Every structure is written in C-alpha cells, then in structure tokens.
Amino acid sequence: MVKCVVLAGSSESSKEIALISSTSEYVTNKAFLEINGKPMIRYIISALEESEYVKEIVVVGPVDSLNNCLSNFTGTVVEEHESGKVLDNVIKGIQKINATENILVVTSDIPLITSKAIDDFVRSCNNKFDLFYPVIPKEQNNLRFPGVERTYVNLIDGNFTGGNIFYLNPQKIRPCYESVDRLIGQRKNPFRLAMNFGVGFLTQFLLGKLSLNQAEQKISQILNIKVKVIVSTHPELGIDIDKISDLKLAQEIISDEACV
Image (cartoon, rainbow, N blue to C red; front, side):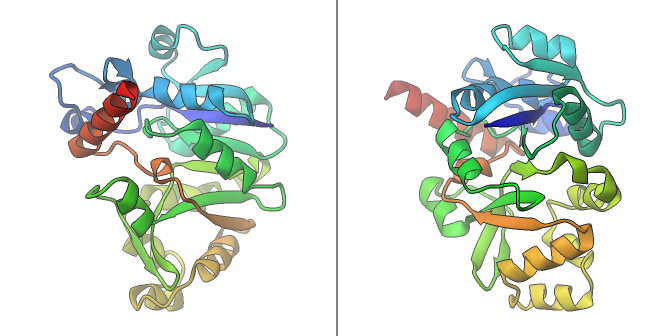
C-alpha cells in the first residue's frame, strides 16, 4: 500500500490554459478544465480511489476551488506553495502526508489514467530505488491513441515518451532539489535535457546510440539517487492535456467509454 500526492497547482499561465480550453469559460488551473461536465482532476482522483494499492491521497493546489469540485473526496487538500514550483508542491504534500517510505506522485492533467495502469506501475516498483519513472513505447502509444502528438526520445531500445506518475523516496527530494527543478523545467525539450548530462551523453543521444540502461545510470549519477525506468504498456500514463487536441481526444475517449 502506498500514499499518494496529487499535484494540482497553478503552474501554467492563464494564457497557456486558454489555448487548451475549447470553451469561453475562464479557467486558471488545468485541474479544473471540464471534460464531459466534470473537472479533469476528478478523473484522476477516481482512478486513485479505485486502485488496490493507494491508501491515502493528498491533493496540493488551491484549497477552496478543490474543495468545491471534490465534495465527496475523503482525502486531504493542501494549499499550493506560493512559489508555484512543482517540487515545492511535492514537498508540501510529503509534509502533510507524513511520508517516510516511497510514495506515488501524480499530476492532475492525465484524465485517461485508470486504476489498472496505476496498479501495474506500482507493482513494478519497490523500495530498492529512489525514483521509478514510466516510459511508453511509441508503437504502444500509437496503437492505443492513433495520431496523438507526443514528445519522443529516440534510444537504442526504441522511441519513448514519458509518463506523469512517479514512485519516489521522499527523503531524497531536498538533496537533489536544484538538479530536479532544472530538469522539470526542461522536460518538454529532450535536447536541452540531454545537455545537462555532458558532451558524451549528448553525442550518444543525438546519434541515437543511447540505451535506457545508460540513461538510468547517468541520471542516477547526476542526481545522486538510484533511478529505475519502467517500460509501461499503459499510454494513458503519458497523455497529459497540453493543447486543445489533447483535450478533444480525452473528451472523445471518455464519452465512448461512458457509452459502453
């Protein structure tokens, strides 16, 4: 059983969110974008509550707005950090949840996530590593969501896109805060990410001669933690709502599933 922190802070600007929304409704936080009449975060919370492994949930974000849309939520809501930084919100969640063992961290913009995807990921994790991170093969993503646009990294093992769920050691956040904060800021740009790891790493990356194992080892070295990459068969872990086409895809899939 694991504790979970859900990140629902206002990390994007109002302008960025306006480009995603298909309505004229003024929304200042992606977590509250409506998908078929429900705020996006409710889909994430529902999947977590249905999980076999999640025993406690803390949501970090604007308390009043979250309490309004999560009326039946039995977990805890914590006010987001004034800095607006993802890591600061993770730390606030960890403090509230009083985590001493590895925890689950989930973003609030992956509405297609399912309890099965969560459970399969958790089953792949243990306490021998400080960070578990899922990657999804391009062919798996295209099979489940044909034509969807994602950012892929070309490795020896294949082309992969990253997920938005993490299993991490809460004791390791502060020691590698600056390095992780920088990587989070560059997460949508694989080239800039690779530049953080030295010329040799960057060269191998550009030539497509880097393996998942090598990436694990280098990231572990830079962050001074033990990192394990999990190749997932659940593309919904990585379908975050970054643009209006993502929102329309989520609306279509959720509507189709509701009709089944």
